[in-house]
Amino acid sequence: MRIKKVYLDNAATTQCDKRVVDAMVPFFTDTYAVASSDFSHSPGIEAREPLENGRAVIADKLGAKPEELIFVSGGTEANNLAIKGIARAHRKKGDHIITSSVEHRSVKDTTVALEKEGFSVTWLPVSKEGFIVMSDLEKAITKDTILVSIQHANQETGTMQDIEAIGALCRKKSLFFHTDAVLTFGRVPIDVRKSNIDLLSVTAHKIHGPKGIGALFIRDGIKIEKTMHGGFNEFNKRAGTENIPGIVGFAKAIELIESDETQVIKELKCRLRDGIMKRLEVVQLNGSLEKSISTILNLTFRYVEGESVILHLDMKGIAVITGSACFSRSLEPSFVLKAMDISHEEAHGSIRFSFSRFNTEEEIDYTIDAVCNIVKKLREISPIAPDK
Ligand SMILES: Cc1ncc(COP(=O)(O)O)c(C=O)c1O
Image (cartoon, rainbow, N blue to C red; front, side):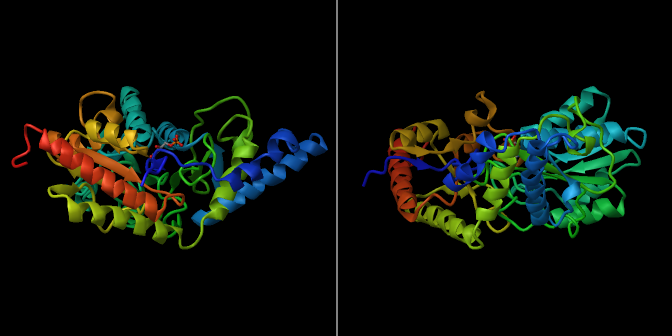
């Protein structure tokens, strides 16, 4: 069996659904006026409808009010705006931020940038499965702490943090709680009120929406400092002409998610994991078995290099990534796996498979065969494999 292309890098981005593209097209060609020109002409007023409809759809999915949601260019901007916006606006209250050691770079590098502005940052360690420990969080809180930013699901392992417990603690201690929900939005139910979330980042391109559009939930009444200046758009919290086609596509992507989609994807993930583990020895799961998002599976194949495996898989038309050089663009293994106390050698043999609604059982079976054959062959020539 030869399948032309198996795309298993859906945690990086997903294929834009054709129905999303179709919904977007009229907003490039017909309804194209600037939506925020409130008191201008009819085309401008007409363009406000898709903007406000999109806002309502996405806010509703989070249990938020439409006016608590502002559109930005994606998850990276949402994380930047949330963290810098809160830190700079509330600096008089305190200058300490708590985050975890496994956050996406858009959180990690933002907090590093704030350190250079004089803020102090605590990087919480994680367990072997990638969880923060609640008592560590509690101990890290000082009188100067203003913000806790902990992701919902991890980009490399899929491990999901207990955002409800974190939210409850932050509320009790009167701290702002931001979560990066880029990988869970539309996949896992989220209720910003129930989880006491103050700020939450989402993006469209992980759920078959277009690239370049995301949103930030900011709880009613919370002050943030703008990072993008140049106009009064988005309740004067983010300047710039609104990306109406993107917003329409984002809302459509949300509407297209079927209620059983997560379960179907989870079955593909289990099929791949079980299929590989039945046929290959010394394969380890990186992350949590139970508390993990359905779209991500990270496995270490001992005694082989992840780079070799992905190159061989690529020749068979299968797209995956490794936890070594790909994430860091150096020979250093990924900081996420390192923070989980996964050895250098284990990290180098790790592969991230990530799934979407467009993957099929046939593709998974093809991938199981390919992975098992490639890893067996590489182990035969590996100088560090114990018995061949
Ligand atoms: C967990 C997480 N946060 C944030 C981002 C950044 O989102 P965007 O690509 O929309 O800027 C990503 C993208 O890979 C991600 O996986």
